[in-house]
Image: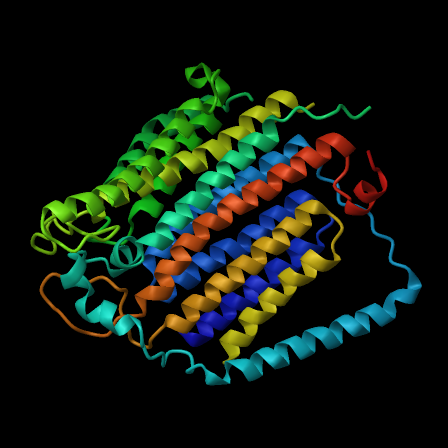
Length: 177
Length: 150
Length: 112
């Protein structure tokens, strides 16, 4: 189980690196799909079927939108010329990443290990959630009953984003000559 | 945007209906089995996206492109807020402590289809909202930008 | 512990894309990678070994469940992620129509 997750994560990392380094934008978007669908399998293995259902549909949607954008504009990657004198930046970036991961590893010492999580707040939800809300699906109960305000905020953000997209794409800007 | 070949159109005719019905099933069973409003909204939007991609914008003469889907989305968020406010107002009358999002309907027997108070109603509202929003985003990107671009 | 480190590596790759790349589409892909890695990290924290998916069976009460709280939070995050990605792509399309390129350095030079 844990080895399977490690293999999946390594595959996702490989897909992510190729997505950022590909010369063609279309192949970059397609290999970005590796990360999303790998995430779906991770959710299924980690006992989260609700998330897997949502993620698999949403990932297809994001890929369709990205491919539509690329087909309507351009698929050529910008040719970047890397000057010789930028080795110092690579070294600095490497040091930064190593320091970042080290700080992360120090800061998660307080967390319990993988698979040995102790539910503090959710103990009440698990014990009495089905009786209090009447919902057999505990995730639905938490989303819509215990944490209804979060869902209200979430759908407000969704509404605002859609209004923003409609506004931005309908604007008539000055023509580029 | 043009449609696809006859094979894709025929397959789409057969499977788009079951996908839509599966979305409705998920939103109805959201408090019993995995799923709920978010998943159901994505499924319903997916069924319509499949139809538009296969048939092109000749389908239903998409002139007022995203008017109806954004109307559904707006109605979804309105329904959500009205249910929450109604729970606040009706719980005073029914003798509960008045709280926003109060689950004032009867809980029923857990496991039945008609149970869990207002959770199925809120699930329907969230499903409308998410489905309308995702389909509006899709239409705006694919139909409009292929009409204006190039 | 290895899983957490791999997860933060994915985060770092996304951050690299946001900071270094000059193409707008690549920057958006980097942001989406950051979001995915955070989702995965939250779910990894909530996992309990041998736990079942948080759905109460009809007859058999009891048994260990995985934590439903991170799952509920991540469920909303995924849908918000689509909306924000769509908004960023809309801005990218507008910029392309005005300047004819995705290169942020050229966009910075071509003012007006």
